[in-house]
Length: 163
Ligand SMILES: CC(C)(COP(=O)(O)OP(=O)(O)OC[C@H]1O[C@@H](n2cnc3c(N)ncnc32)[C@H](O)[C@@H]1OP(=O)(O)O)[C@@H](O)C(=O)NCCC(=O)NCCS
Image (cartoon, rainbow, N blue to C red; front, side):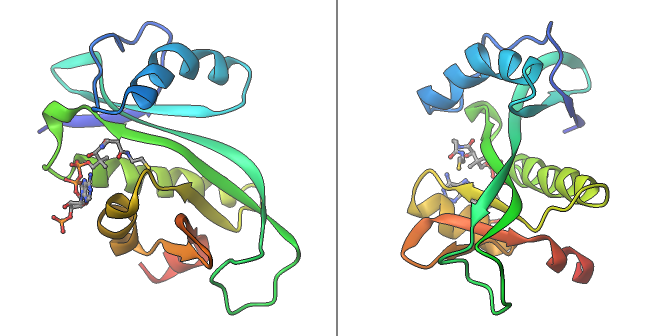
């Protein structure tokens, strides 16, 4: 399938988007635009080449300061580090099982790594929807759980050097 990922535009068609999780559908339709305008988050959307305004997937990023307690890192770290929160990621349920979720995730890591070349970003953090998504979707790509918080996962950007 020929898809591209780019920043959300105000006239994108988000009405039919359905990933099966109502809060993630509603957020895209009602919150993503205003959060973009206020620079609270930046949302990226996946569209098909032959229907370039219809959103079939999205992710949203946000700069945060993350507590390092429980971080699965062997390095000595300060109490807090700069991080990017992968605040939302979802794919329309008509398009699952073809690697498009993986493409969204790789694009989110790439975008964050580009940002970290300009400003300091130590890691990407995501709060996984459930244990299955944590173990089977995020962890195979190098995300690791916080100690005592199995659904809060971290990806250290320095590992991208080895990829
Ligand atoms: C999670 C989601 C993005 C995956 O999209 P997808 O395109 O089907 O995923 P991919 O085809 O790229 O699959 C990549 C891997 O993740 C696994 N995976 C995908 N969705 C999964 C799910 N819901 N639960 C567990 N594992 C999943 C796949 O089995 C695959 O592993 P494999 O290569 O070993 O078979 C999509 O199902 C979705 O939007 N779900 C609802 C919202 C959600 O859960 N978002 C995550 C919020 S933290």
